[in-house]
Image (tube, rainbow, N blue to C red; front, side):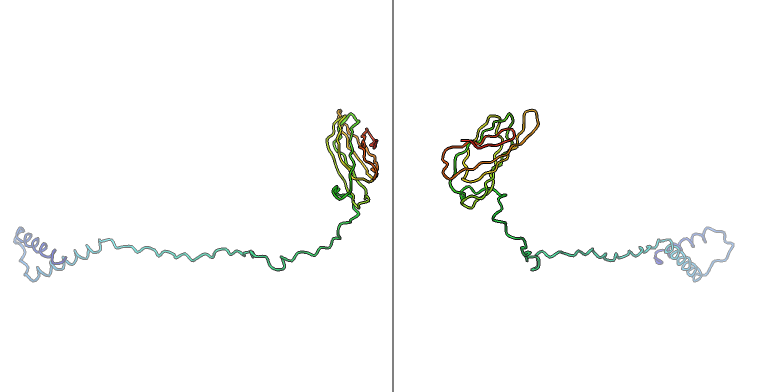
Length: 204
Protein backbone atom coordinates (compact mmCIF):
# COMPACT_ATOMS: atom_id res chain seq x y z
CA UNK A 1 0.00 0.00 0.00
CA UNK A 2 2.92 2.32 0.76
CA UNK A 3 4.25 1.89 -2.79
CA UNK A 4 0.85 2.92 -4.24
CA UNK A 5 0.41 6.03 -2.09
CA UNK A 6 4.01 7.31 -2.38
CA UNK A 7 3.81 8.41 -6.08
CA UNK A 8 0.58 10.27 -5.40
CA UNK A 9 2.11 12.20 -2.52
CA UNK A 10 5.19 13.06 -4.57
CA UNK A 11 3.04 14.36 -7.44
CA UNK A 12 1.01 16.53 -5.07
CA UNK A 13 4.17 17.92 -3.54
CA UNK A 14 5.61 18.86 -6.93
CA UNK A 15 2.39 20.57 -8.02
CA UNK A 16 2.15 22.58 -4.85
CA UNK A 17 5.71 23.68 -5.18
CA UNK A 18 5.29 24.76 -8.80
CA UNK A 19 2.06 26.68 -8.26
CA UNK A 20 3.09 28.53 -5.15
CA UNK A 21 5.05 31.78 -5.02
CA UNK A 22 8.79 31.31 -4.87
CA UNK A 23 9.01 32.87 -1.45
CA UNK A 24 10.52 29.82 0.24
CA UNK A 25 13.64 27.98 -0.79
CA UNK A 26 12.99 24.59 -2.38
CA UNK A 27 13.55 21.48 -0.28
CA UNK A 28 16.23 19.02 -1.08
CA UNK A 29 15.01 15.84 -2.85
CA UNK A 30 16.03 13.75 0.11
CA UNK A 31 13.92 15.88 2.45
CA UNK A 32 10.97 15.68 0.08
CA UNK A 33 11.25 11.91 -0.05
CA UNK A 34 11.45 11.54 3.73
CA UNK A 35 8.50 13.86 4.20
CA UNK A 36 6.45 11.89 1.70
CA UNK A 37 7.37 8.62 3.32
CA UNK A 38 6.37 9.98 6.75
CA UNK A 39 3.03 11.24 5.40
CA UNK A 40 2.41 7.95 3.67
CA UNK A 41 3.09 6.03 6.89
CA UNK A 42 0.70 8.34 8.75
CA UNK A 43 -2.04 7.70 6.18
CA UNK A 44 -1.46 3.94 6.33
CA UNK A 45 -1.68 3.95 10.11
CA UNK A 46 -4.88 6.07 9.99
CA UNK A 47 -6.36 3.74 7.38
CA UNK A 48 -5.55 0.67 9.44
CA UNK A 49 -7.06 2.25 12.53
CA UNK A 50 -10.22 3.12 10.59
CA UNK A 51 -10.77 -0.53 9.61
CA UNK A 52 -13.18 -2.08 12.15
CA UNK A 53 -11.63 -4.94 14.01
CA UNK A 54 -13.57 -8.12 14.32
CA UNK A 55 -15.04 -8.30 17.78
CA UNK A 56 -14.61 -11.83 19.11
CA UNK A 57 -17.86 -13.51 19.97
CA UNK A 58 -18.39 -14.24 23.63
CA UNK A 59 -17.63 -17.81 24.43
CA UNK A 60 -20.73 -19.91 24.41
CA UNK A 61 -21.33 -21.97 27.47
CA UNK A 62 -21.17 -25.67 26.79
CA UNK A 63 -24.29 -27.07 28.46
CA UNK A 64 -23.43 -29.70 30.97
CA UNK A 65 -25.42 -32.90 30.52
CA UNK A 66 -28.46 -32.97 32.79
CA UNK A 67 -28.83 -36.38 34.44
CA UNK A 68 -32.04 -38.08 33.35
CA UNK A 69 -34.45 -39.32 36.01
CA UNK A 70 -33.93 -42.91 36.94
CA UNK A 71 -36.78 -45.39 37.18
CA UNK A 72 -36.78 -48.60 39.15
CA UNK A 73 -38.25 -51.31 36.94
CA UNK A 74 -40.39 -53.92 38.56
CA UNK A 75 -39.41 -57.48 37.72
CA UNK A 76 -41.46 -58.79 34.81
CA UNK A 77 -41.09 -62.41 35.89
CA UNK A 78 -42.70 -63.24 39.23
CA UNK A 79 -40.38 -64.62 41.83
CA UNK A 80 -40.76 -68.08 43.26
CA UNK A 81 -42.31 -66.66 46.41
CA UNK A 82 -45.03 -64.98 44.32
CA UNK A 83 -45.86 -68.24 42.55
CA UNK A 84 -46.44 -70.19 45.75
CA UNK A 85 -50.18 -70.36 46.36
CA UNK A 86 -51.50 -70.01 49.90
CA UNK A 87 -52.33 -73.23 51.65
CA UNK A 88 -56.06 -73.90 51.75
CA UNK A 89 -57.24 -73.70 55.33
CA UNK A 90 -61.02 -73.82 54.80
CA UNK A 91 -62.77 -77.05 55.58
CA UNK A 92 -64.38 -78.98 52.73
CA UNK A 93 -68.04 -78.25 52.06
CA UNK A 94 -70.49 -80.03 54.32
CA UNK A 95 -72.03 -82.98 52.40
CA UNK A 96 -75.16 -82.61 54.55
CA UNK A 97 -75.64 -78.98 53.49
CA UNK A 98 -78.80 -78.81 51.37
CA UNK A 99 -78.53 -75.10 50.49
CA UNK A 100 -77.48 -75.89 46.92
CA UNK A 101 -79.06 -76.68 43.55
CA UNK A 102 -80.52 -80.17 43.46
CA UNK A 103 -78.82 -82.79 41.31
CA UNK A 104 -82.01 -84.26 39.88
CA UNK A 105 -80.16 -86.89 37.85
CA UNK A 106 -78.80 -88.59 41.00
CA UNK A 107 -81.85 -88.08 43.23
CA UNK A 108 -83.71 -91.22 42.09
CA UNK A 109 -87.00 -91.70 40.23
CA UNK A 110 -89.27 -88.69 39.74
CA UNK A 111 -92.98 -88.08 39.91
CA UNK A 112 -95.01 -85.71 37.68
CA UNK A 113 -96.25 -82.62 39.57
CA UNK A 114 -98.32 -79.60 38.53
CA UNK A 115 -97.92 -76.19 40.14
CA UNK A 116 -101.27 -74.34 40.18
CA UNK A 117 -101.50 -70.64 41.02
CA UNK A 118 -104.80 -70.22 42.88
CA UNK A 119 -104.12 -66.56 43.82
CA UNK A 120 -105.04 -63.30 42.07
CA UNK A 121 -101.37 -62.33 41.87
CA UNK A 122 -98.31 -63.57 40.03
CA UNK A 123 -95.96 -66.10 41.60
CA UNK A 124 -92.79 -64.10 41.10
CA UNK A 125 -90.58 -66.87 42.49
CA UNK A 126 -91.09 -70.30 43.98
CA UNK A 127 -88.47 -72.40 45.74
CA UNK A 128 -88.88 -76.16 46.21
CA UNK A 129 -86.37 -77.74 48.64
CA UNK A 130 -85.81 -81.49 48.95
CA UNK A 131 -84.61 -82.89 52.28
CA UNK A 132 -82.06 -85.72 51.97
CA UNK A 133 -83.93 -88.64 50.40
CA UNK A 134 -83.30 -92.37 50.10
CA UNK A 135 -80.68 -91.71 47.39
CA UNK A 136 -78.66 -89.36 49.62
CA UNK A 137 -79.54 -86.27 47.59
CA UNK A 138 -80.90 -82.92 48.70
CA UNK A 139 -81.08 -79.40 47.34
CA UNK A 140 -83.37 -76.82 45.80
CA UNK A 141 -85.21 -76.10 42.54
CA UNK A 142 -86.77 -72.75 41.63
CA UNK A 143 -89.45 -71.50 39.23
CA UNK A 144 -90.49 -67.97 38.30
CA UNK A 145 -93.36 -65.92 36.89
CA UNK A 146 -96.48 -68.05 37.06
CA UNK A 147 -99.45 -65.74 36.47
CA UNK A 148 -102.88 -65.81 38.14
CA UNK A 149 -104.59 -69.13 37.36
CA UNK A 150 -101.39 -70.32 35.67
CA UNK A 151 -100.16 -73.91 35.76
CA UNK A 152 -96.74 -75.49 35.28
CA UNK A 153 -95.95 -79.21 34.99
CA UNK A 154 -92.63 -80.37 36.49
CA UNK A 155 -91.00 -83.63 37.63
CA UNK A 156 -89.75 -83.99 41.20
CA UNK A 157 -87.73 -86.80 42.81
CA UNK A 158 -89.37 -88.79 45.63
CA UNK A 159 -88.91 -87.43 49.16
CA UNK A 160 -89.93 -84.70 51.56
CA UNK A 161 -90.32 -81.23 50.04
CA UNK A 162 -90.51 -77.80 51.67
CA UNK A 163 -91.95 -75.00 49.50
CA UNK A 164 -91.99 -71.18 49.52
CA UNK A 165 -93.49 -68.70 47.04
CA UNK A 166 -93.31 -64.92 46.65
CA UNK A 167 -96.50 -63.40 45.19
CA UNK A 168 -96.99 -59.91 43.67
CA UNK A 169 -100.58 -58.67 43.34
CA UNK A 170 -102.10 -56.28 40.80
CA UNK A 171 -102.44 -53.43 43.32
CA UNK A 172 -98.69 -53.60 43.96
CA UNK A 173 -98.62 -55.23 47.36
CA UNK A 174 -96.80 -58.53 47.84
CA UNK A 175 -97.28 -61.65 49.92
CA UNK A 176 -95.84 -65.09 50.37
CA UNK A 177 -97.02 -68.65 50.87
CA UNK A 178 -95.37 -71.75 52.30
CA UNK A 179 -96.07 -75.41 52.85
CA UNK A 180 -94.77 -78.85 52.06
CA UNK A 181 -95.59 -82.36 50.91
CA UNK A 182 -94.16 -85.85 50.64
CA UNK A 183 -93.85 -87.77 47.39
CA UNK A 184 -93.84 -91.45 48.34
CA UNK A 185 -91.93 -94.19 46.55
CA UNK A 186 -95.15 -95.84 45.34
CA UNK A 187 -96.66 -92.62 43.93
CA UNK A 188 -97.06 -92.63 40.16
CA UNK A 189 -99.98 -90.35 39.46
CA UNK A 190 -99.59 -86.62 38.94
CA UNK A 191 -99.95 -84.57 42.11
CA UNK A 192 -101.06 -80.93 42.35
CA UNK A 193 -99.03 -78.28 44.15
CA UNK A 194 -101.75 -75.75 44.96
CA UNK A 195 -100.47 -72.25 45.81
CA UNK A 196 -102.92 -70.09 47.75
CA UNK A 197 -102.48 -66.65 49.28
CA UNK A 198 -100.60 -67.91 52.34
CA UNK A 199 -100.42 -71.66 52.02
CA UNK A 200 -99.09 -74.31 49.63
CA UNK A 201 -100.69 -77.78 49.62
CA UNK A 202 -100.05 -81.01 47.74
CA UNK A 203 -103.29 -82.63 46.49
CA UNK A 204 -104.08 -85.66 44.35
